[in-house]
Length: 202
Image 1 (cartoon, rainbow, N blue to C red):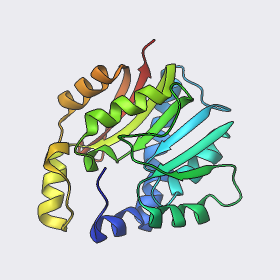
Image 2: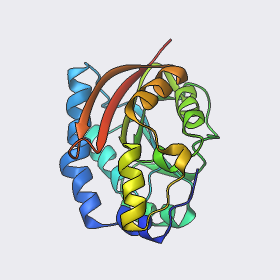
Image 3: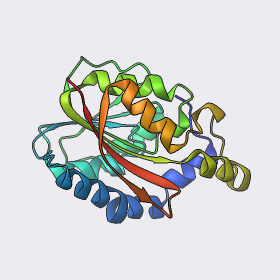
């Protein structure tokens, strides 16, 4: 998994990003879960790439999980996340999504919100997420289309690995190869991004 550069860090920590997660991204995923008949209240949840912890704190408030573990590669982000989740029962740890230090099938669901387009080995990462989600558990993902990622790099000074500039057919194929069955997907942000809910096959 790649580290974020200064521009990307600023974008991920902006109040606009937090507002978007609270009012748009997580409500969309919650409605998709409800339509798929998936309830995560009291479940064991994994937040992959928790960043500054805002989404982790939201997941705690929304689902009141039995367990919530937020992971990030960057210690400086985890320091911010500790402040964001203070007072909740969420736990945090430093880890690479391509080599998760977790037992097989130890979570009911994983959330991955805009992380894999930073990961050259994103297919391997999906395989690792599938490994730690129990059979019948779910992955909730939100990702950017590779064309938008490339445009962002040119115009905004971000730096994403070309190997992670996937399109939607490639991402769906990655989910399938990792052992997930797609339950639902929905376009976001004028189709620049998409949300996915997928179930781990037995």
